[in-house]
Amino acid sequence: MADPELLGFEHMGLDPRLLQAVADLGWSRPTLIQEKAIPLALEGKDLLARARTGSGKTAAYAIPMLQLLLHRKATGPAVEQAVRGLVLVPTKELARQARSMVQQLAAYCARDIRVADVSAAEDSASQRAVLMEKPDIVVGTPSRILNHLQQDSLTLRDSLELLVVDEADLLFSFGFEEELKSLLWLLSSCRSPSCQGQTS
Ligand SMILES: Nc1ncnc2c1ncn2[C@@H]1O[C@H](COP(=O)(O)OP(=O)(O)OP(=O)(O)O)[C@@H](O)[C@H]1O
Image (tube, rainbow, N blue to C red; front, side, top):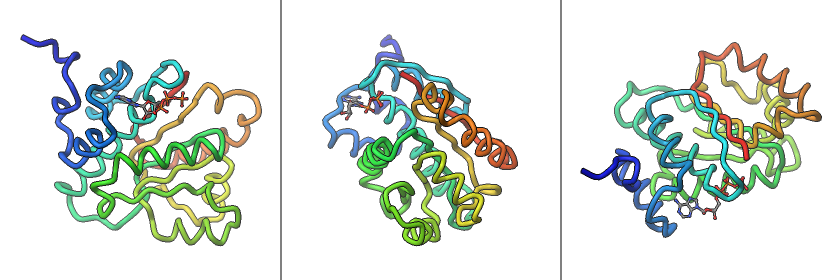
């Protein structure tokens, strides 16, 4: 019998729309980090994943995040539209890249799952307008996210289910420490979301 760890994306129980997006990207098999992390994240486990640069870490958190949100929308009780996934990244450029990857993976479910990069717009009025739409997934730097939480233009307390700290080694290092501490303190009032930390 084939080793389940050596099987492809189609054996992970993913929504067909995600499988189609993965196929369009030309990915025939999960990378090692995806093979290991996706099944555990789908079980709702908290993860700390470490893999080298370019090993596919973004999809390792984005695929289960999308799958869990799609499953919830399809099978859970109808709930108000709200931000349920938060991805913290150290820079605006990484926010742009992460959002782009998540959006490519969500290409066939864009009506069900909306993704926003709160670091993209410079002025806070535009950022607030984006957040008022209550995207399902918000990507941003800690300072931006903290700012909006403090101004109440972003509310996560009753809705946040999935938290990703991308480039966690960088984010927990000197320079982001104070922002991250305040942010985590504010997030501690959320009903405990599943967490993924990614480092390279
Ligand atoms: N299963 C896969 N098969 C083929 N290519 C893949 C697969 N998963 C991701 N990729 C591609 O690998 C490249 C690197 O992916 P990604 O940026 O997610 O890596 P990373 O580990 O997050 O890198 P970094 O540490 O620089 O952020 C991207 O071009 C992505 O499209």
